[in-house]
Length: 198
Figure 1 (cartoon, rainbow, N blue to C red):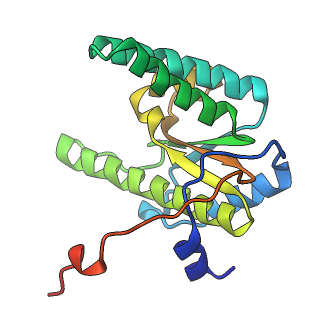
Figure 2: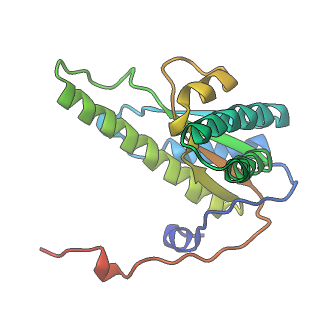
Figure 3: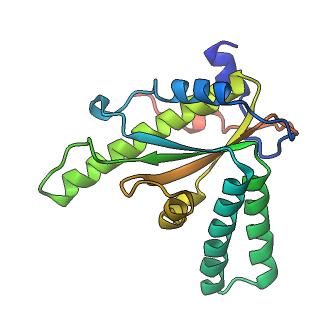
């Protein structure tokens, strides 16, 4: 599959068959991810591969408890909380593998003022997101379904504890992976509605 075809045909798929994804294929996806551009070429991405069912279950339960607590504090109805937490749990445990995409600032530049330091953090976030997109496209090219979930941004310390991640790893998202058990179509706004020519 050429890159333009992969870009045009990739979908966010959330339901997968029971077929496992072997480690060699996961390694190929990670190798594609680290080919992304990065700020200063510092490569601030880190990846936690969660292939064991027990580890996926532990992560899903921990994240679900935080989600429930947050929604209870917001005053959300119990039934809606349980539906939301149930969807999240099913997506995490129903995947053949998860890849938690993290960033680290250890090799990024440091500045004495908060404004420039915030820009450096943004550059690291952008770099990690580009690595994640490479991984999603590589998964699609290899016949896998995948979906980026942003939920770890709401509970990074929960994710870090559940997976025993190093303290400098900042979870940004979790990519669910597996052989697809669904198809989806996607729409995009017309190009002219999102582009300015100067």
